[in-house]
Length: 379
Ligand SMILES: Cc1cc2nc3c(=O)[nH]c(=O)nc-3n(C[C@H](O)[C@H](O)[C@H](O)COP(=O)(O)O)c2cc1C
Image 1 (cartoon, helix red, strand yellow):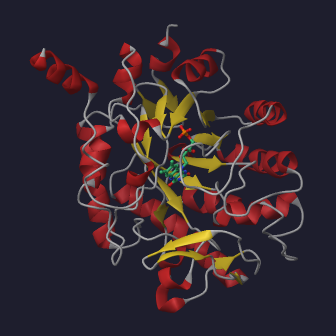
Image 2 (spheres, protein in one colour; image 1 turned 30 degrees about the vertical axis):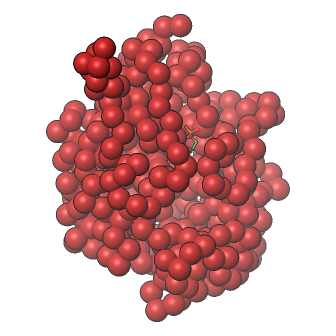
Image 3 (cartoon, helix red, strand yellow; image 1 turned 90 degrees about the vertical axis):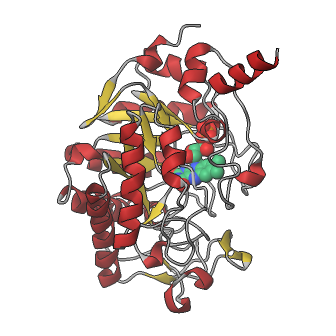
């Protein structure tokens, strides 16, 4: 099957991309845990993957309170900005584009990871039945404190400041992480948001926090440089909603007038071969809902989740998506784009290298062209 649709250039808002293959955000937990500065190998790692039309970085903390895992990077200090600038440079030198995914984990955290042993924050004081990965090993997430209105304003400002810093570091844009059970998603869904003020209750009220963050970011960067990621049916982080179609449909309609660069949709995340606690493949009914979300959204749309190159190409060819993102395949295939273009086999990575460690299982996966050379030399 020809994969020609995947190799057509396009633009996502103001970001021009050379092909429709996006590297999905992948937390790799190799940052310095005391400074939250990305690892010295990060520039090489991302540079190796620059043939993707667009790279979305691993989730990156917007503030000290945003952290929920050991070894994840941040973007609020000068040292962090400098290290991220080297990453953006490496990707640009290799001809690629890169946006930074900005997150706040909210209740998915533990006092061990937070300044002064603080309790995590959330829309409501409802503990997640989930695990936080601390320097002392996995621990149950702590009971969070509900953010008051001043705390909400401070958090919105932290997202805008992080976007400003990503811009200073030379990124092509930012992606608002409103997926996978973290703070923005916690506000969106009624299982984790039981507030009685204007940030809780109706779908419109639950969307307010996400919308305020997106709006605040548009004051520091053009909307065409800002994307957003959603996972309406995700259950990771003890998440759920009584009416996902209404919750996320309402959000999409409220976001449309902003003219963001793209909507990045996690449509399926079966957690087939990774150490995570839950997840189910998208069923037919959910796929129909995603088609409706795609129809509602007025900008570029990136589909994600257990995609194959053929399925992604079909999505782009029939305008079911503007681009497709791949997560796990990029771990062991820095040249994923070349491999699918040439029909070369894909390598797979062992789960044990996903999170933590150094260069091993991170920057040492060979390109297929060098595997071929080695085989030819041996023959
Ligand atoms: C090791 C690992 C780390 C991940 N880290 C993030 C992350 O930082 N932010 C995010 O939005 N999704 C994250 N995800 C989810 C992926 O972006 C993607 O949605 C998921 O892997 C499904 O796509 P795939 O089937 O192509 O792998 C992660 C997934 C894996 C396997």
